[in-house]
Image (cartoon, rainbow, N blue to C red; front, side, top):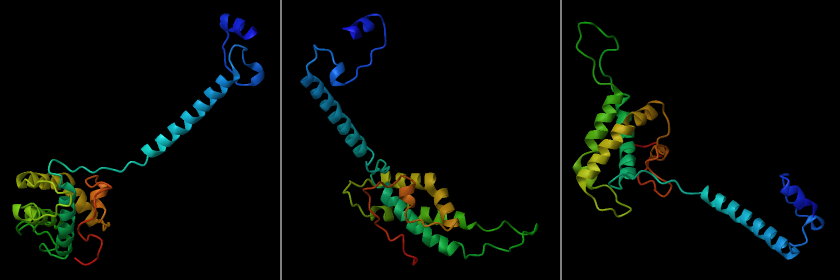
Length: 190
């Protein structure tokens, strides 16, 4: 056949699945079967790609498995501390040279309050444990300090800007799609 001669001479061979142009040695049922298999493989790959795109986001639970709950507790306490700290006067609005140093800023007050009230062994041992992980309090305390070190300034920035902080832990990828909101972070009442 002419297509075989052209292929032997180095011509580019592009197969065309048209009944009149198929070589006589390939049965038509084989072409139909091949076409059907290619079509099914293409739809199976498209379905697999669609399922892969809908995976749930998994949060960073840390070594203790309690980072999401710790983050939510920090957000709740930070909201309370921010409501108190932003109305507190830290000293004179004027910076006199002979006066002593000004008081702490509202941001510093929030971080210190959260560290003092949330990252202590008593509070951390009473945290809810919805996934039933074994609690090793020193590890949970380390996780609390780590969450505050990594995300404390971002949390204070969100409070300062007046953002809704109910979804803060999810936006920071500490909580995943399977984690639930355990503290009431959406209400306006503190």
